[in-house]
Amino acid sequence: GAVVSQHPSRVICKSGTSVKIECRSLDFQATTMFWYRQFPKQSLMLMATSNEGSKATYEQGVEKDKFLINHASLTLSTLTVTSAHPEDSSFYICSASLPAPYNEQFFGPGTRLTVL
Amino acid sequence: DQQVKQNSPSLSVQEGRISILNCDYTNSMFDYFLWYKKYPAEGPTFLISISSIKDKNEDGRFTVFLNKSAKHLSLHIVPSQPGDSAVYFCAASDTSGTYKYIFGTGTRLKVLA
Image 1 (cartoon, rainbow over the protein chains, first blue to last red):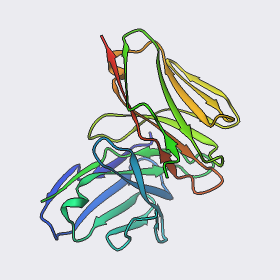
Image 2: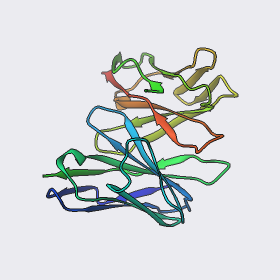
Image 3: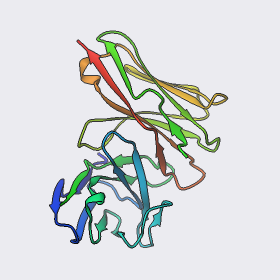
């Protein structure tokens, strides 16, 4: 149980385009999902916390207009990288959290974004 | 400000021996800690966790030790196997808050056959 999927696994796009990444909890309902990015050989940096039916909470330094997060249902959250630039190239990982009192996070397999 | 640190970026251990990975944190509000294993271009895989009410948790070959006074935790893997070679991240959470995880910088473990 507790499987989280991401789609696409890999995307290459041109600079200036927008890219949408989906995160789904396949066998449980997640009221909270998290979005991380990882640069090569670096830690996973939390970008934002996504709560179903409400606005996402962004970490300091993360542009909310650049990284649009929508958590429309208890099993789906999307991250849209708007007007992507080469510096947005990274590995994006989502996680879905079990509801209280467990709150365990389960991670998706990640999405490799390359912006040309 | 790195609230969770793993000061050893890499570690090599002989197969069959013990691997000890260390993690330090600064935020005294953290009360739940986890270890994840990660391969390149994959999401992290949960290994083991520990609540601050404990000082040790064991699961098979994996044991996590927590020293709250020193704000230090460690992961012991014994015996180490070549398949354990990966990057290991510790993570910390304040369960009175948003439950978000703050990850350490990672340690690359290489188990030599």
